[in-house]
Amino acid sequence: MKLFCSRDELVRVLQITTRVLPAKTSIPILNGVVLETRDDQLFCFASDLENGIEVKVPEVTIITPGRVVLNGRTFFDVIRHLPSGRIEMGIEDKTFTIKAGSTFFNLNISPAEEYPAVPDGLKRVHLYLEEQTGLSGEELLFALETASFEEAVRQSIYATAPNDSRPFLSSVLWEYKPDRLRLVATDINRLVVKDLTITGNSEDSFLVPVNSLKEMAGIFGSSPEEEILFFLINRQLYAVGKGIIYYTRLINAQFPRYEQVIPESFDGEARFNRTILLSSLQRSLLIDKAVKLSFEPDRLRIFALDPERGQFNEEVSCSYDGEPFAIGFNAHYLTDFLKAVGDQEEIVFHLSAGMKASVLRVKEVATYTYVLMPLRLNY
Image 1 (cartoon, helix red, strand yellow):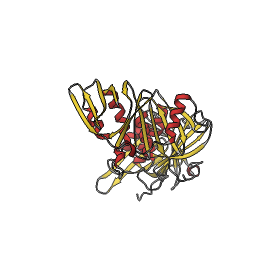
Image 2 (cartoon, helix red, strand yellow; image 1 turned 180 degrees about the vertical axis):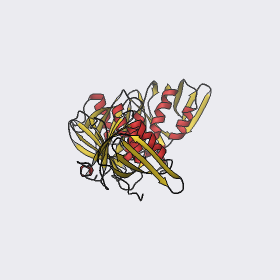
Image 3 (cartoon, helix red, strand yellow; image 1 turned 30 degrees about the vertical axis):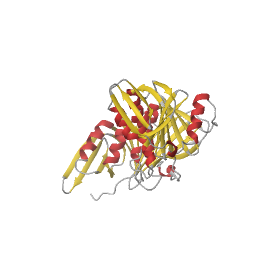
Image 4 (cartoon, helix red, strand yellow; image 1 turned 90 degrees about the horizontal axis):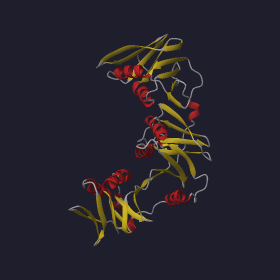
C-alpha cells in the first residue's frame, strides 16, 4: 500500500471517523481505524459494533492499493500535528510509514483480519450510490435537508434521558409515512412531537438511540445546504451525505402510546413574547428550579422560593384567556423549549389546571408540540 494525500483533508476525515471509537472496549481491535483503497479511492472506516462511519478521503493519489488497520487516536494525533501539504503514506517492513517533508513516523499495524466485517448494508448502500440499484423501494426511506434534520434533532433530544436504562427514554421514536416524518421524544415529565415533510415510499416506526442522533447532527450539521439520504437495512439506520456513511443499530423496544398524553382541551391560553419570558425564567432559576406561574388577565406573575437563597418575584405582560389560576413547573423544562424554538417570538401556552398536562407551541406552527407535566408546589 502506498499513496499521497492532503494532510488537511485527512485531518477532517479523521475528526469525523474517530467520533465512534469506543472510550473503553474489551475488543482492542475496535480502537483502530481502517484505511482501505477501492477503485482508486481511499476510504476511512471505524465502528464500535453499534455504530459505524465510513468517509471518503478526497485529493488522494494511489500508487499501490491496500488495506491497513491503525490505532485511530494515535493516527489522528500524528496527522493533525503535521504541517499542511501533501503527505506520503504506505506500508513498509510491516509498519505504516508517514512522510511529510523532513518528518517521518512509523506506526504499528493491527492485524486487519481481526477487524470485524462491515455490515452487509454498507455494501448495499455503496452499490445503490454507484449504480442506483441493489436496494428495494422500502430500504431507501427518504431524503432530508440537513438543516431541517439538525433542527429536528435539536428540538427533540433535550426531552430525553440518554443514560436511562429504559430504552424508550434513551431513544427517539421515528414514525414515517410517504409524506411525513415524526420524531417523538420523552423523559416521562415531558413530551416532544416534531413533524417534518418528506417524500417517501413506505411507512414504519422505529427507535433511534439519542447518542446516535447527536452524532448524526454533529457530523452532517456543518453543511446545512446539503441533503441526507436515509436507508433502513437489516434494522440498521444509514445516513448518507457529503461522502459520509453513518449507520446505527436501532433499539428493539416499544414506545408508549404517546397520543394519549397530548391533551385535547384546556382551561386557559396565554401568549408571550419568547425573549421576555425566557429572560424572566432564567432569573428565577437563580433562586430555584421550581417556579410558580400565576395567570391573570394581561399579566403573569413568576415566583420562586428557596429557604436558603430567598425569593424571586417578577411580572410579565401576556395575553391571557381564561380564569385566573396558579400552576407550578420546572423552570428548566420551560427554558429548554424556549431556547429550542430559536428566534420564534410569540409563544402560545395552552394551560391545564390541577395536575394535568399543558402544551406549548409557537404561534401558527402546528408541526412542533411540547407537552409538559406540572410540579406540585407547597406554596
